[in-house]
Length: 192
Image 1 (cartoon, rainbow, N blue to C red):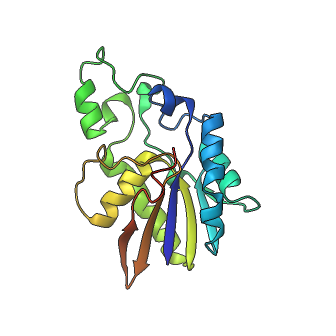
Image 2: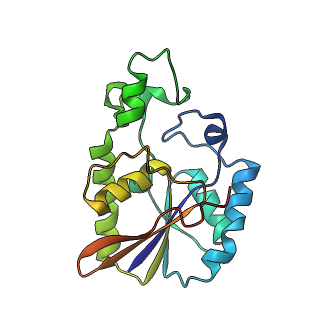
């Protein structure tokens, strides 16, 4: 089984470098164009199943990149819950522990999640996918979800900030003989 993870297209928060976490926001016009730009690549893959986070930016990306398909939506694929930091700049010198939060992605002091919590959600999603396997599944998700997926698959404590995913980039993971492996990361990074 292969899962083709796609990060959603650009949002105003991405463009303006604002934290939104699980706040539901739409794509920008550029984000819509990014989603349409990957349509020819995804059209060549015979997807048996389509999954998406239940937030509108992933569902909108999916509908533009894979038109005519109805995704199985799940909160397991949501972005980090960042608690009360939603709406604040990503770099915020007024926040006493700003550098720590950016480096560790530990939002628990603000009512949100830490990397272990989002990795647990990703593991639950993978168990769900493994229980109903398919040859190729498209998965529309978020940057934090993709960082957690990479951490779960590699089995290592990675710097999720260094593992950033480009908007609408494709990341390919394979499940074979009871093990997940990474086949491609930021496959379409040249699409901006």
